[in-house]
Length: 283
Ligand SMILES: [Fe+2]
Image 1 (cartoon, helix red, strand yellow):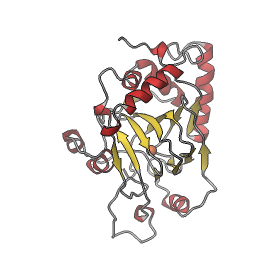
Image 2: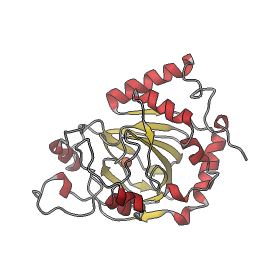
Image 3: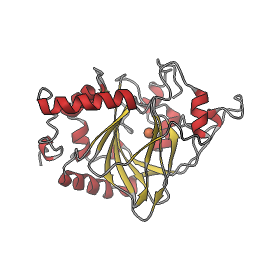
């Protein structure tokens, strides 16, 4: 069956197919200012309830293909300790992690989420909200629009993303916990601010913000510069999200180490494109 954007996104409320409409211009203005000041913006009830149900079903049908990982990890998504650094360096702080992904290469050809990610309308809308153009869909075949599964007791510790811009689309909310916490713009290109990062890892809450998402909400945020985490899932219901991502570099993919630790495998593209980053930040 042919898919249509108007069956997925609430275009009445959010006419992303017509970026000149006064309605969407107003929303873009608000998102842009929130992203600038807070590195994060939420668009409530972006996905229509029927489409949300399609996404939930397509994920549930493939739950046995989800790569679950329990490996402890540092905020830079490395599992390996660097003994050459001082003991209190943030790169040497490892945190419990229990989290899974349905990799993007497992998605069915007629996947609702894949269709949405591949529409020009969504790309152009996100680009306008960020006030950055061009942005690109992520070339990483495993990570570009993965479903994220956090089962009961699941936890995603403090980390930075490899991609610059992350969307988080909530599919299913847990009974309790699973709260998104973030520290807006704690690092920037060329400036890691390890002292600030360490304070947060040591438990300082002064720069930590919380966000409660509801199913259907779309969150846009700058995950490469904003350290973030998801608190422990409490109760019997898993937390389901989709995490489509956009980048500034259409060529780059995850490092082989990241891909192995988070998505469970390394493809030839991860080895071929494993080059130093131009923003000088740890990846
Ligand atoms: Fe993340």
